Length: 190
Ligand SMILES: [Zn+2]
Image (cartoon, rainbow, N blue to C red):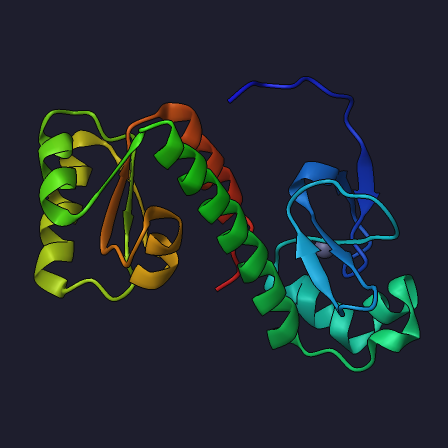
């Protein structure tokens, strides 16, 4: 991946009113398809929110997104906003996994990932939410020993969609794909 230098743009969170760098905020757009969240810049009318549960609550209470994007959005819930953000994170991660697959910079499956981990080739480990506890423990111990970060937000189907089928364990062999995924999961609100 290339690093693009660009001017800092500040935006105001419609929840807390703080001005922050646009990269730290989630962008929401309305439109005929309903509410959608984006982790990246986009065209058209947008409203910005901190990836923070308190800001989601304030936004819903004050109907701030409806005010910013149009009343036709209708009633919104905190859960809806949270899911929109989670969806945006998932899509970004899946896009990066797909690119990593094409670049042959990803390994999947317990055995292959285990081997790559032993060989110090793994830069980031993705364990599915539904991995068997015994397998999870082994990977956690090994990753900790080697200082490899772990992400456990996605199901095996979500992890596997860009890789050709359900995957319990996925390892990134490339620092910039790993970095991209870690950047995306910063926006996740549990
Ligand atoms: Zn905020």
